[in-house]
Amino acid sequence: MNKDLFIKELEKIGIEPTSIQLKQLEVYMKFLIEYNSHTNLTAIKEPEDIYLKHFYDSLVIARYHIFTNEKVLDIGTGPGFPGMILKIFFPNIRLTLLDSNNKKIKFLIELASKLGIENIEIICGRAEEIINKKREEYDIVTSRAVSNLTTLSELSLPFVKIGGYFIPLKGQNKEEIIEAEDAIEILGGILENEYNYELPIEKSKRTIIVIKKINNSPSKYPRQYGKIVKNPLKKTSK
Ligand code: SAH
Image (cartoon, rainbow, N blue to C red; front, side):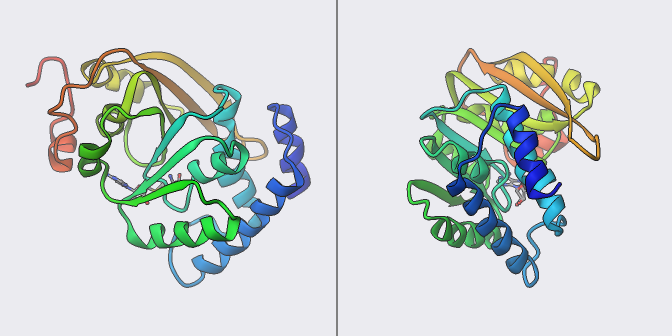
């Protein structure tokens, strides 16, 4: 997807990028490619793939949720997807980017400065540990390509305030959603919507899952990562 097609496809989902935003994306692209040449940040390396699989894919969420000034957390943001892209297009969100990998955090801090973005929080840490300082603080928690939905729900839903939303970006996998139903309920969530879409050009299938937080997450969650993975939350398990 070249830049012209990127702009056209965004228009179809109701987003008209300003010249400042397009310039910021160019700066992002250049810095990502340059940094990736010496430090591994992403397997996606070609500009056309970056426009499609990183920039465009990060923005589709805006078709289903109107961002204003909410408090937003992106868990396992890597080199900033989808969080940093949302911040470029919706500068009024109060954004926290979280990743456990220090080299990605270093990249993000430099990137934010290059983009002229100051009001952003960039944290190096694991979701299971950071939760102690941030429990039920966020209006929106999002995450892409971090883990299966059951694990991800335990890592993410405890950060969402009641009335807020956990909106993960996933591939299309109905089984995965069904499997996560118990975990979502135990953690105080309710599955509100699933939006299926195809990426333009390569047509790979994606789902945006919208989970509303209706009850507090019990304070024993999230557990340590090993336990989350070994003993996925099920209504019959303790
Ligand atoms: N969201 C980005 C990166 C996905 S790779 C994208 O879609 O391109 C997954 C990232 O999650 C990695 O950078 C890894 O360091 C981070 N991660 C994995 N488990 C985590 C945890 N428990 N807490 C915080 N970050 C985590």
